[in-house]
Image (cartoon, rainbow, N blue to C red; front, side, top):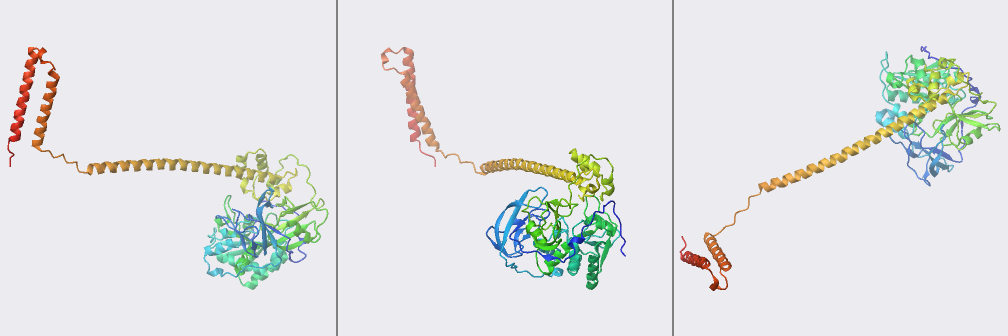
Length: 558
């Protein structure tokens, strides 16, 4: 028998599971309309690829995965897309999100689909197929399953990685996984073998709480008939033993360190419903368009239904029989579930249970009293935190201190609130603190991105200026080099004889000008000195004429 380990804390709330396991899984009736959110998974919302008024077939892609962490969304039945707009969705905030409204035509006509030979696919091709089929974790986290399909390293003391199939289903009232294992164990084993192949896992453990004897027997029978080396292990019934990290601890004795993932210690964990959907995607080529949902609480006939994604929750509850004193509906279990924000919300991939509540079933909580420091919350905390300190710091909005006390290690199981004698809604404070820290981190990241963009803009402008200056300098340098390389202009050719004649003519003209300036019109009034000057100028003029005539008559040299 496989050795089992224990984890710290945990509680034993009333199970309330037998009410919804008395009848087989029923197929829910086709609803009047379906509202399909494009965000049904962790990561980025899918991008709509259809328009209002478009006719679609069952299984047709209506929302394409975007980014590294995302998943596809498909039409759950054939019909017409009547609108793509924002509508209220199942979320504690009650805020709207982008959805597609589909009006069924009643034909339920499928697109063409077929099996995939997964053994001849590469790792990348297999992951891409699951991404296109919209396969996400159906245990509650809705993390895209294709991201988790990475070959496992060996954990400490082991030669190969370990694959764990989670069938614990520890929260009260929820029985969808229990009934799925009872009725479709062969398909779950088939999907488990596909995961083992994809992860190259050497050891496969299927953990089921020991309060589900029928499911344990069905799974052991299916494993035996398959001849596969899987081990079905009955684990103690304790809440929150179905948490992936705690189930890993119980089955292997390994502990996932704070801030780490199971793959960091060579282990990977998948929910049984996720495993079943992987079998449908590979053996039949079917995308994830429906799931098993428990409808229980204040209804006439609690049971499990196979329901199309996008079905209005109130229409589904009506099929189990409404009771007039129902005052609210809870999505999920009583420990971690949330009240639906509106009567118009619809079922998503994350919806595993709907509890119809009444004052008799869930009486109003007593008034909240001051914390008495009894430490009961610390005694039952499965993550070994100090819930009372986290409460004080969250209430005081000292978010740095909450992080110092490992706020994000809290799995929000509600065990602390369950045992608190002062009826303090401790988990609500932790969720508030987490949302504030995430919001501030998002603001800081946005500011950092804006600063980086501004710095890059400044660098770009400076670089462009420098490049422009360098181009201008290079252009001027090239022009200077071209000017220096050009030959100097030749001096004008002159005739020596013409040059002398030009000089003589210039001298004659100058002498005329001087004579004109000196000689007056009336020569009778000249002084002896002026007459002497005139005579000298005339002599010079005669001399110039003589030289000019002698120069002209001189023959040229050969």
